[in-house]
Image (cartoon, rainbow, N blue to C red; front, side, top):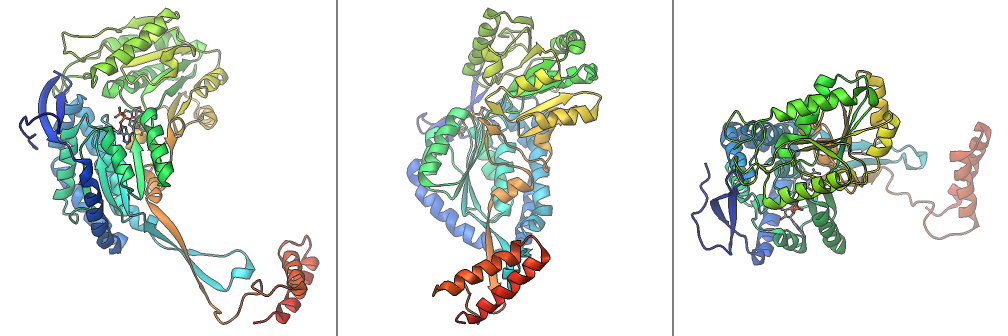
Length: 525
Ligand code: NAD
């Protein structure tokens, strides 16, 4: 296990806090911003050698990283639980397993996805060229990560970047410096070339300084407010970015849904990671025939959830990460009840469990005027609204500024998929929630305020590569007929070409070919 440096003077250090007790469990050195130019220089040097390796060789090296994760899975999960608070089972599934699956998938498929592709030109004018599409790395990819999935998010961003031949600089969240230090150690242990993956530790300002140091691409995951600053900073420097921002995921429960399963999905989807997930179920819209029973089941199941420190294997829900997170949940609940919503269970702090525990909560009678249905909650709250029918549910679901994920619950798969197509979001699951994040083939990302670009899947891998078109002329001695000098003959030639390519009838097209050929022969060669 990585041992935190023992309590050195505070300013140059990040505190690692156990959210289950609010105790200080370690201190980790902050990376001075002045070090960044040197860090980037080293990364560039390492990247040149790495990029020169064939993708298949890079993929083989990733297998070693998979081995490290496999061997140290329990210890990684324990560090995540200590610092983030989530139950150990969640750390194993959602941080370690998701990371490992991503590493293995890239090791297996990256070469195929990034391999050269022959271009078949459809236009006869260009049939005399042999062309290929070649994937090339950007150079240095900066990965700026949040605290809620402190291993899975940086790993699933860094691995495709590495597979595509980039060097990576990871800036983990300042709330999880122990996880950050562990990440650096895991990549080191995998035997990747020195400086290929560097972890720098510090607050948001260090993330900003990292962008100012001009990496070649930025993958940012975090809040909308920080994402806007990152987009601005990248825009000013014309650095391409992927932004994975907040969510306000809708769950639509149709009257014919299996309410036993749907209610369990709702309770898990709103309370896993103590509700602190970008893909959390935050708004539930239920058709009339299902509303009463669904709500009753959700309340029953929520009341059964056991709160406590995540290292206890019999705990379902851990603490929130910091006090400001609790205050945000309370502010939204207070606004909702003032506007007529009803708290059916929970809704209180649980100081008996620890300073950052909050009871899993079910709220009914909510509507779009409430902050609870507008802002990201990021806490263990299930807000249920009755709707007239599926159509109204779709309209309300699409009202949000966010567009990350959504789910539809029904026994009628065709209807579920039809509704899924109408929802404005990056992913939609029918009869499941959130597991898309753990499915490496599923592109992850949002629309509107949830950001742009994709991580995971071949789309996430292709985000990490620049495509280059390389073409060789098979007849290099001929000059092109559209080059200088221009004269009336070129115009005639162009007319012939237009006719030949786009003429309405075969006869017109043949006439075009003949005319073009005549004028082509008269051009200087
Ligand atoms: P945050 O925006 O506070 O911080 C995220 C990271 O950005 C941290 O490392 C932080 O130090 C850094 N940062 C802050 N300001 C910066 C700046 N100006 N320039 C560069 N870096 C800066 O977010 P958080 O509280 O750590 O995470 C919670 C948020 O992340 C939620 O909104 C959640 O929905 C979102 N999130 C989104 C996804 C997704 O995939 N869409 C996944 C997880 C979390």
